Length: 379
Image 1 (cartoon, rainbow, N blue to C red):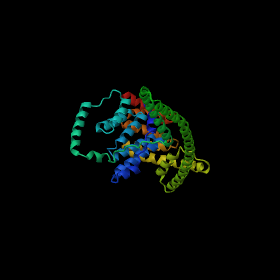
Image 2 (cartoon, rainbow, N blue to C red):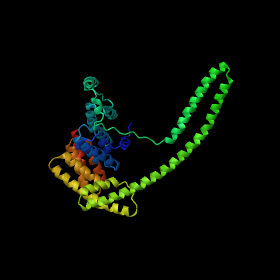
Image 3 (cartoon, rainbow, N blue to C red):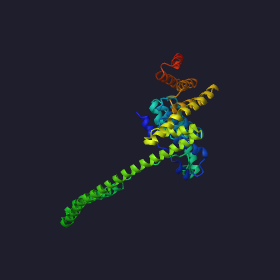
Image 4 (cartoon, rainbow, N blue to C red):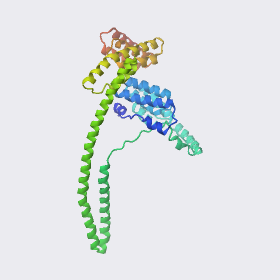
């Protein structure tokens, strides 16, 4: 069984700078969709899965052919146990025949009985192959398309090991030559050549110690430099985070509350020290409840207009900003109602149960239980 939390943690962001260099004519919609894709991964790493899903839906609306985003959205739906939504997303990818193997693999994890329409897809594939022959070199140009968001493969720094591995390969080859030569020349009784091969073998064995010592020295040197590099990187990352605190203060002074709150969420897992910690904690205390209130107010306006999906996105964002402010129970209750109005009964019940657990003595707890009973009786 796939660990979908680990699966999400292992999703790398897309290097938009390199992609732009290879595709200078990339449209703004594609660029913005990639930015939203990367932002979704950042939101997940700070514990805001709901906002990550919203960012991915925005990315797909800008770039409907962004199948990497579809796959990631499907994994998010599995992680949040919205299995019906996940199935719909993966089927879209499979029908489009892009990254279909990845989507099919995920889909089978939640619906083992699912089988794609093989005959139909084989026929379509044959037709596409015929068309491909007439296009000539078109395939090569398509490989450079900005929609081909292939991830770079990591390369380890193992130069020191190459030296030892090369010599070991040479030594094994020498042993093979020796064995074959011994078999041949023994029949010819050529003692001089046999003695020469034996001497070369013994010399090679002696050199193994020398190369192993050199490798050990290089390995120790590498480990020392790597430790220094990690420490410098840690310090650089800390100072970069401190500069972001200054930017948050600037955004707050300009009344850009939502932007400031987004930056705070990205820094919530940073271990600030001393004065930086005091400043950051004060910003969290002042900005996040205010941002949560703003999103809740916008959500209520949309809710009153019966725009339930848009309202839900606002309520979810409010919850991500803060779950401990004056109207947090109201916000959670309206989340549940929106899910119910959108016929997502699984998430509606889950949200109402969460409210009952967190606020058992509130009037909304009784309202939520009534909603749960209503849903269960209608099923």
